[in-house]
Amino acid sequence: MKLCDIIPIVALCGTVAAESHDRRPLSYAPKPAGQYIVPKPEGTESLLDFIRSRSDLSVLAEVIANSSGFTEAFDTIPTWDYTFFAPSNAAFNNTGQYFKTFSVTPKGKFWLGNVLQHHYVPNTKLNTTTFNSTYTRFQTGTYLFVGAQTVGDNVVLNKASTINEGNLPVTKGIVHIIDRILDPSAMIFEADILWTTQKFIAGSCSNPNLAYC
View 1 (cartoon, rainbow, N blue to C red):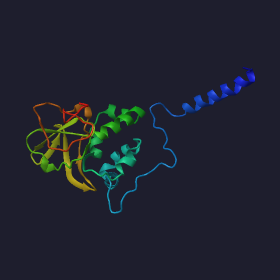
View 2: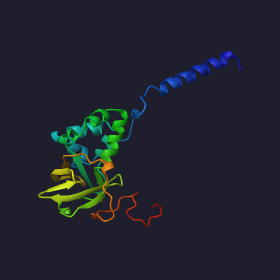
View 3: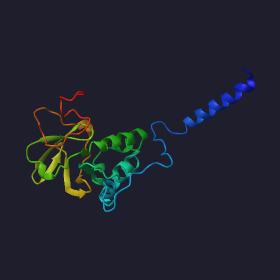
């Protein structure tokens, strides 16, 4: 192969290498042009509509905007019922200094997206009247568990996060405003703790007879 043939190949490889490093590690790729957006039926209120309508959820709205794909997901009207525990602005302030510095990094934003999934319960509307003074657990979209019980007039999750405002309706779902973030690493999983009645979550092993469990 002649040198004149090699030079264009080297130049091309250099260009590809340069382009592949334009994006920071762990950062999200830009959305492709012409991306399909699921149409939203008239007269409906998506979870994102609800969050954006409340000044006490402005930090949550910002977190959603910074998590790739979450804006579209939260703005889509699902065909199933769901429950969402929405961390208030106060919830994001009830964290340590490490959280504030880590959450703004690329890895932190990715982690926060996973945390938000832990606040989502698909297929079931969990009203506050579902819970009582008996400590029970329910499964979230991460397949991990959250503990819940009533303490006085309040519903408390994981013995730390209080529902300050509950049973707020949106299309196909119900929202509860909470004052602490539900951390998946604080999962409640003990066999002797009763399981709150809820519908099956696809992909979970709530039914041990499934072939993949």
